[in-house]
Image 1 (cartoon, rainbow, N blue to C red):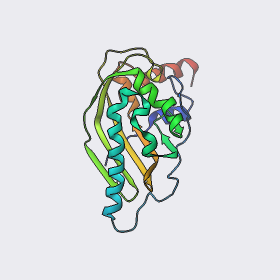
Image 2: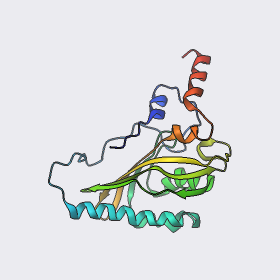
Image 3: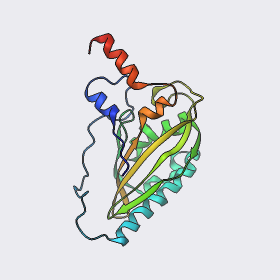
Length: 203
């Protein structure tokens, strides 16, 4: 089991978030659109393989990220009404254009020296597939990502990435990034900053 607790989301609910606002929508991420996350039927290898293969094919486009968002060809793999649920601090996006505007472009333009470290595990069952890395990748913030100034820190991103397939397209994606650890590696202790701010305002 790999679990990432979205502590920044709890901070936001408590009105104690001490960082920049999200570019995308901030809300309580809903459950699966199809409400079928608990699978009680026998394992279907064909369906599971189809799900992880679609995800891996889509990820190959990430290798062309520096060529521009269109080069990834997301419309080939993502449903037109795709829902992307990012970690608190990033937010959630609906449809490919909104995802590109609110997350993909900032990720591509504001981060540099990206190094993919590989996946520790990949998994699939039925219409669901995903992977995680610890860390998944390293990068440097050249200024602007999450509203932060530039940093020379080679910061690791711990990521858990889960997809729901609908037919031959991916319809939902839950991306959990350990934001607190990522920022801490750049010298920013978000929890300490929260305590300082809340002490000042008497929270």
